[in-house]
Image 1: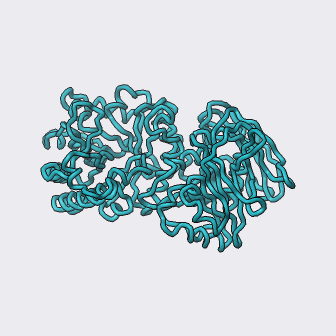
Image 2 (image 1 turned 180 degrees about the vertical axis):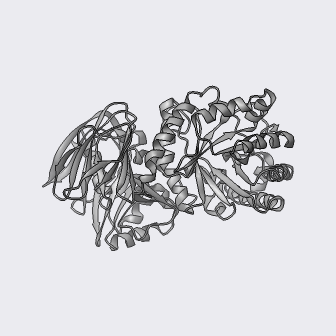
Image 3 (image 1 turned 90 degrees about the vertical axis):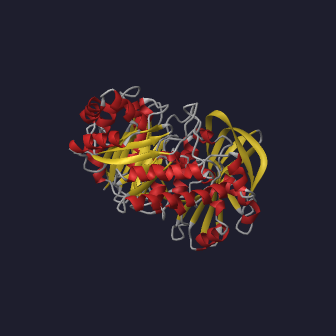
Length: 568
């Protein structure tokens, strides 16, 4: 029996299929998965590196799953044979022979399946002499994106000639800020491929090469959904370098983002080294399926990220872990009354005029210190706020202006380094600052312009140090960034907030200790109701405290737990 609110797929790579066929283990493997998970579909890979499965073997595998009522799609991973298993060596798209080889693989696979997904190794990272010569004076980014557009059209034509009704899916990797450097261009490729898929894997957030924060799995899913709603088929994550808790958090983020399909990569690892993940995932799928249908469509703070943009690498994951619910978009949200702009927005040559227009319309625009650094004097007509080359070592903070000083003072658990930002007194106001030796340094600035307000949020030199901002400082940031939303939270860092358009929301703790969270609903005398679930009960009623146009609720969260709530 399938889940009601999403489907689940298992990815069998070519190595998995080769071994399972050779050792007659396919039925045993499938029985293990189906015992714990309602499997709706499998992706069967025809090619990966030096492994190329015969048509006879592929048809046998396809028939095996079809007989059991499981949908079957094809898959291709465009990697070359390497002496080192994790060499990450892509095809060379400058080499006519390798391009022909790719077209041959696509034609072969399209002759077996009505749907094919391209693993995210479809990118190009080749810098052979032929690529260097072909690139000429172009940047690697421009060269690779243009080259991959050509290759994409070639393989699409090849697939459609073999099977006109085929659905060709391109799967995009989790490293969205760097896509263009290896040829990925979602803005262009969305019109080439039939569908796309999103990599929601974050794995370990500290010890892996990418240091992707948990919230990224939600953010990237919503980003790709915003590119062309309905064309993003689902989210895909794996087990590499994951603790069991990290693996389940990837699953949560993918479902919280309202993925229609979830693909688990890959069968070989899940049936061996990471076997424990399967029954736990099955339990979590069943539990999520009980309530996810009661959630609306995700909403949040509009966050503009233009295509082919970068800067402040993957900062959105860190901001989401502060409890800022983000709604990413590749199109400037000109109608929004509040929006967040990170350094990625510098890609837009008209960004300053767009900021002015938003402010003139009465909007509030929050920019990060990274975008301030990129624009600096270009913003001087709005405010004389400047990023400097000076640094500050901070371990104490103050927030909430009171006359000429601050109302609240907070210690921190550790010293962090932040950039110093200059501003002009009484033209700009600091709402939160870091305090050191007879000086202070802005953490959140506010400047009035026309009918709106510009805010500047300081990102520490190590973005992970943003988690060391005290709860009192984070609360000022959250309140400022959430004025157009139905609620905000008050808590330390690493508490996630996920909002939906039907007054439902989720709070999840990514912390390692128990935490009390205050939910500030922007409505007088609001009521809070927990959506039915068999765990994480509120217990006694959440403590309800009325305020001036706000109702506060105190809720307890254990490490790694979430609560699904509705505002009545």
